[in-house]
Image (cartoon, rainbow, N blue to C red; front, side, top):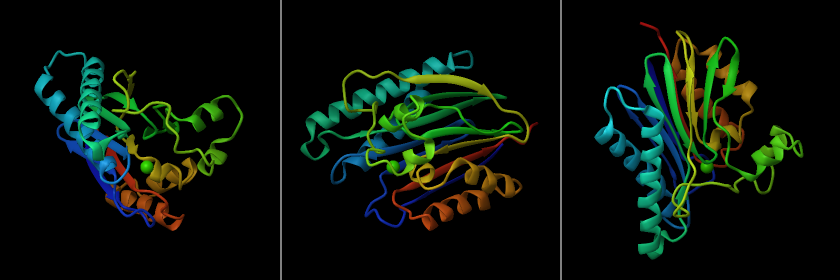
Length: 240
Ligand code: CA
């Protein structure tokens, strides 16, 4: 497997509130924090660290990986929620988290918020996760198109986030990736700037140079306006 990852502040924001981690051999996470002042950065970095630590401390060969991801995100939720109560400068903070745990050809994932996990296979680019956002619900109900969602005034309104309440529902699942397939984890600074056709073309055109593909994705998001922080992790299945 090959791993390529990059985070960029974008062209408008003063800080980068995205966090990510690539923990070999098989744990990858992106998080997109929200909250005033430093709180967004605190929330996303704490989520990535809490989930990573929990999985590294509780992983066993025979464990249920979906349940492990769920427990890890619940733990992160508890830690962030408690900190938001105890620190004035962190009040109301929260974050997305999208995570994958690889086991051979199986990709286990756990997810809350509007960051995304995609798979690019011979079937094309497919979104694995659902966005927990108002605009996602409007798209699903047929009120707006996915393209209209990019510029919707309430596109940043989440229906679920890590750390904003004591209880949270975590989405988990698994999918299979084969030799030649890619997995992309990314924040909405990428997907609000680039449509999926463009993302698919960039990865496909640079399929033998993943580092260039990630750089091109971020450059293209900035050329489209760079309204938000942009983070992408690209995994390539090279087979055995
Ligand atoms: Ca964002």
